[in-house]
Length: 255
Image (cartoon, one colour):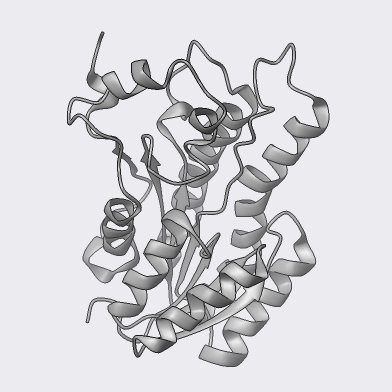
């Protein structure tokens, strides 16, 4: 199996892309730490993995809180022996986000706390464990919104995802020589409740947004999980500092 013997922390693993990755990683032999702010959703994901014969434990986690990260990494070490893969998937994209002239400051601060400070804290506490095990893989989830603007701005989300790309590149250079790879997945719109929040609020641009996708549809969480699996596995041992856009061709489509 592609992840046999590896210990993987996946944030936001109770639903959406994170849950799809947790299930996929476990199928491939990983021991999965489901780090999830929603304790019920996290336990559900861990139970589903266990019912399928996999190994997982759920840890209630607010990724913006350093003490929670200390606890998550300690659980991974106690239960499974350490950390090999850190998948920083958790993010928020509230409908209250918008242009810098109107996004409430508390909304801006919360988005950056979860989407940027959260991955930083995860790396801060997981990297020492990876070094003790001789290396590892950091996977950070950005977005195509890190590279393009939009007629309907979500500036806090965009800023957080762009900064995460830069942070990942720095990690790749600093820790690559020590056996730790750091890479970015930059998805387009994926059919999850968070990504489609603006559609749920009656976003009149949803049809126009869909038209940007040459494949004629939004992505599915399992399609992101397949790419994350590659980055978590030893198959990607020479992949470091990469930004892997997976968007059905949306970014190359000039309309």
